[in-house]
Length: 551
Ligand code: G6Q
Image (cartoon, rainbow, N blue to C red):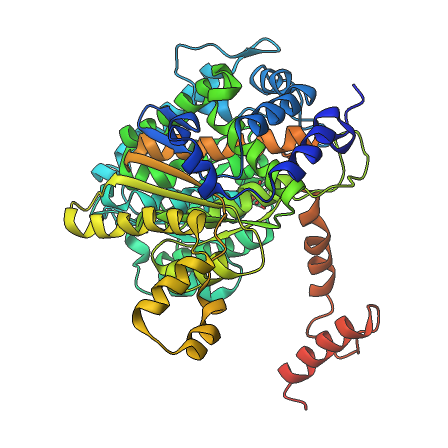
């Protein structure tokens, strides 16, 4: 199939449609159609997805769906769910969805029933989690584990950390879960400062078991533990590994019986559902972890089976394309109205940008259009007192996702109402804006001074017409969180299919990693470094000299 996004008929039609629609204010669209909310919202179990505050008409959706057809989106979805090797540059299947399939659903590929493999690891994790939480698993000196430290980075950190923080209200009081990712020694030091080696268990989470940051932290953690007990046998009681690399785990000195495996068809940023989620299960219990998987599975079924018009990830992904490629949006903001989802924007940054921040199509051509937007965000209402100014009156179009819950897990109803009133107010204010006449009327009520009014008038105008999605969920629990994450995963897939890029490799992180390995040999040397450009040489030489105490 010779598919190139910007050469499609649908692209042409959308360009034309964009010129028809670009100046129409959403406030007029709402006035003209009382059913707009009904027409542009989708309910999926406990999730309401309202996309009516977008710069779209029914024709826009029709044209975007034509684009999906031209991109063979349906076939591509089926391809992922039937285990095709769609990560072509790494020659891998993409099967994170399989990790959340129920035990009775067979997933047979090349003669292997992956459901069996996956559930057998899950059962081992269940036993392990039960043992640690109940105190059956003991540290080297026979004490119960009170602190778990997950050592991992990128996909082996961001997802589990986000979930653990989000569901903290379900966490056991007797077992604290910490995350150390950075190779900055401060990260590990600050974390273990108040911990006791006797009651601390480290989980080395690394798909490859070669990642510099994680391995350095793991080595240092090992020293901390071994020095305390003066006996190598303590490693067995204080370290477990999660990886696809059994040999690496054994070489580190961890008995494979203390290793939980996963597979190369699970990408790092899609791995929280695998053994990489062990820290989640330790924190909230295995039954709750299963609920997380169930929520994601519900969304997998929805994505696979729902008509595209009613398919939340499909609509989300197409709207991203609409704004990035036709309105020229450069970024999207993720705005959870939930303190519990504090880490959600960070997780999505990796999920979206590492997946689709690319410029070469799956058939090796360079794109002549933009791909992934920059993803950023922060919980409301903190963001309101920080960057919302730019969202309302800045010069860029920044589509926003508002995410909130009807019930607050901390049961403080009145305060939660105040919180959610802000959510609803912001989406309305962004859409509606405040035009010159409205501002003028308001100013005239308070002052008769025409000069003063004229001076302040332009500053008080809000152009409005700023798009947002609202995702309103009945309550935050493992099931709904699993579903929410999976919605975004599939949204990313939809974007990738339309742009025809491989959302599952990440070659862009390689160059810097390699260079760092090269540069480490140049540090702490007496000879001047001269092999790089003058800036890099200059920085290295300054660092070496200053470290030696020279000026
Ligand atoms: C995610 C990326 C990347 C990866 C980390 C950690 O999709 O591949 O963020 O998760 O580099 O890799 P390891 O798990 O192999 O240590």
